[in-house]
Image 1: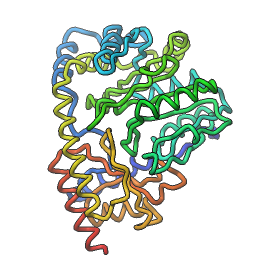
Image 2: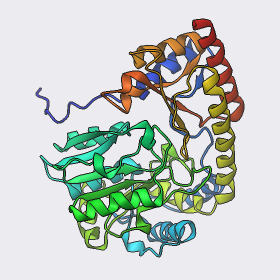
Image 3: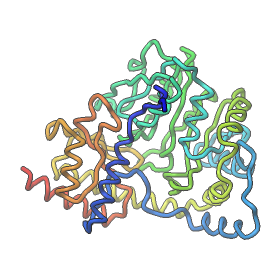
Image 4: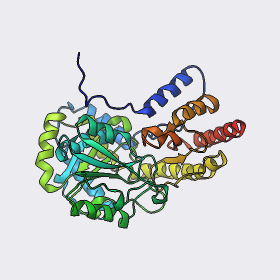
Length: 380
């Protein structure tokens, strides 16, 4: 049987690390998980209780393609509360996770053969989804002095779109209002499609994140219930699109997905009312972040751009290895700590970087740091 050329995307290496960690645990080892980018906490209690009640008296059939109207109104209200943005709920598109949002966004914005700029290091699935659509991802080598975020002079001339992420994955760094505004202005001046990945909004530790919607209505903004709302496996996210794009996205959603999962939408609607629980989770991440910023340098991982948000630290380890994948496997075997090779996020420089996640409980993060310090001291 033949294969399509565009179907030959790269693997998501962190999933291979997760499998190696699972196999080690199955063999009886205790592994501290610093590789996986998901909260260790469950979905909010109120969300789970509401879904349980709904399961008793609802059939969970199809919803409308763009999502439950009540959920779209709830998300629009979140923008008012968090950012002071008055958002028409009609512009909110509920999706099957942020991944579904990217499929819809890229389908609506780009043609086969288009070129789209994105920062490296960055979330690897941007590249792979674009390639699967016969769109060419154009990596921009961001720099530590810019905290691994793109600046206007990084944007190539021959692109039709730009993807930014703030807080970023793997860096956890954020774009300030001025920095994000400069990129939005450049995109508008050059008629580039602008996609803002805001999936880690809510997870900030000093100043809050800025949404592109504070600066322009001519952007696609992607978010999700996965991170701040602790609902990774529920696969429910959202996207805000310009008014003129609603019908195009609706037609795509009808045909590609029919609708987002009904049960997950009910849980998500009620998760919006569980902010106190989510803020308690954020306080745990804040404590973990401080432990990481103190503990990683003691283990020899001192070349980092301190994260503003999300739950990651991205470290330059080029003085320790030129093969981050082998180094991550060595750390898993020797220290019992799972970490992610930078090759997932930067195909050109990632052999010299690692990502550390601090989404686990504080005692587990402290244990992981202790193991890293002891292992790296013995390694010499």
